[in-house]
Image (cartoon, rainbow, N blue to C red; front, side):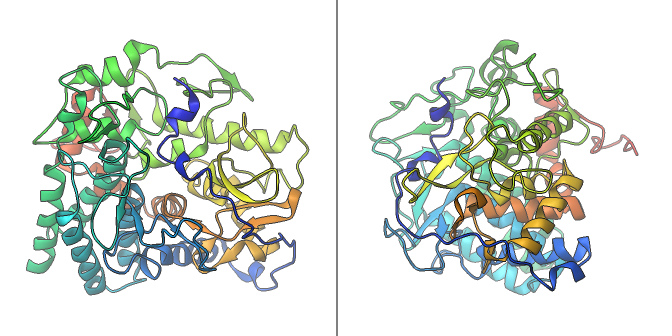
Length: 463
């Protein structure tokens, strides 16, 4: 399957072009070195959370697809919210509540608003569309035939449902009622419908107008592992083990023997088999799903993601294209806003096999759970030496010292993993909530996973 199809859910904004960019300045931030590592991480986490709190879409409370502080929205889409990014936002709100960035009462109010909006928004056999009009709840087509249910985006959202439910389920009467709303939303997703009539695989899209015309089977490896985990975990609309083994794992053909920079890829990265895909593949599925101690017949998932991150890091250290600043404290290639050849702003799926000199902060920051030393070095370098990369909602989406360029815009799908993975690195909170959900434990067992860190009831944890 062609790589651009694997990224279809993000590449629709590739056509954005405008001149909203600013030069990268390597000025020193005189106050930065006064911060300890923990203070620095807390500052980044708190500031980045503002994307989902201060800059959320006001009517729905959901995460905007994009936030442009300059007010320049070329497609006039400031009101468009993103399903998957809002799932990341739900987990970010739980993190912020637990850290005291916001009051629990405020969180409950916002989370009720989001749940009520999602209850009334368009759904397609339980799944939501990729984009939704935040003012009306109606579908905003992602493409001509992509105007219905998006199962992958829905799985990113549903991860958040379980995290919210688990956090509030034993709270006050109001909090229990909130947990109940999210439980109902979760149980209403018809995962098995998306097997296209009972095939041993899940499909990404279904449209009420075009049915299965997009015909996008979910096969690994990419960012979609969580979709199979959520589907198998559903207590109401589950899928079979065969769908995972024959669909996602392609009867074992998912396994790779490729090695880059002495790090095995472990699994076959679709369209990027030599050095791995963009780093968001190591993030989206693992915001709730804890890869530590997680194994199945195909992979050790901590090793998979560590190796993927280290290949990306090692590529920057080698710097085969001799881009300015690349190195041990400036690295990270993933999908984000990007610099077009004419200097305008577009979108690109950056990775070692597609490097245009643009680094995306979310890549290294969200990999902190795998590469803490390397990620903290990047964060400190960016904060201390590139103050123009820092804005109202944390680090901007992308920058290139090579071209003295910064995209001073934000995307939900980039800011969200930063908040959640910083929380998981610092406390493990989001992982603990998700992994201890009873149906997740059952779903993982059903698919053949074992986890030494979160044993089933009746077994003692491995320390």
